[in-house]
Image (tube, rainbow, N blue to C red):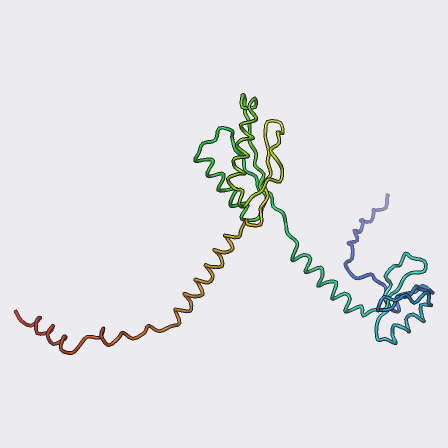
Amino acid sequence: MRPRRRPIEHVRPSNRDTTRINDAIRVPNVRLIDDDGAQLGIKSTDEAREYAYGKNLDLVEVAAQADPPVAKVMDYGKYKYEEEQKRKQARKHQSQIHVKEIKLRPKIGVHDYNTKKGHVQRFLNQRAKVKVTIMFRGREQSHPERGRELLLRLAEDVKEIGIIESQPLLDGRNMVMLLGPTKNAGVKRDAESENAERSEEAVQGDGNRQDPAPPDDAQPQPGAQVVEEEAQVQP
């Protein structure tokens, strides 16, 4: 009877820090770098470790493949914290490029053209790139200049917020042009959002106020009330 095969264990990669510091450095000698970047030459690992401890810092192996390995004196906890903050800032400022696509026909009507143009303007104001495609059918393929004229017309209509990044290019039965947002793209939308927020804050502020008392001239006089009552009593 054949022995049962053992299942293969899939080992997941570990995310833990594998940098060797202090007592984890087992090589006999290291090339030592001071915390200010000064080269201190080749030292025994014990001597380098005691030097780091004397400064109340850590001995960190920064180039394990070198001969001998390179170790640096530093505050490793502070170093890891600063590196994590740098990564967070890099992710925060990293911009994702979105590409939207709009398809047109060479003989598009005025109403449909304006609708498509509105979509292009909306995408550009969202700071996205727009791939505009003209689709040719049948005999339309013999007049590619009409598609080019339409694309250039669209680029001219949105030139305040869009710029041609890729000129109209014939690709099989299609002609493609790529538009990218300019610096003015989204500026009006951001201004409108800011104005809306200010208006909302103003409304909330007015809600906490009490209506001012009417002026003395606006308050009814006692004599006027009597005259009105008498007028109602008379038949």
